[in-house]
Length: 63
Picture 1 (cartoon, rainbow, N blue to C red):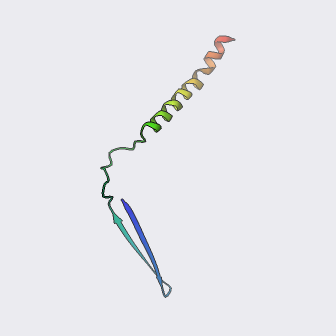
Picture 2: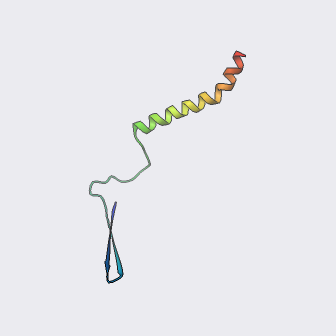
Picture 3: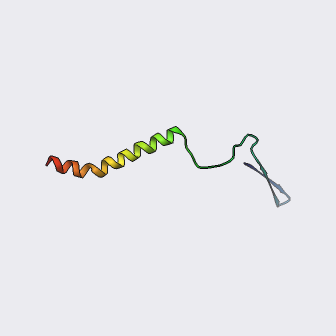
């Protein structure tokens, strides 16, 4: 959906015209997805969180 606003000023009077146009080739919105790159970054962040959470136990094993 694209929104176009046209602002016109005449004799110190402001007129705002708003037009909403649906995208011609838009697919129906079903969910928020980011694709493969977002999934990969999320997986790496998850692994990093697990490693940081387990790190004190691993360090304690070697001491």
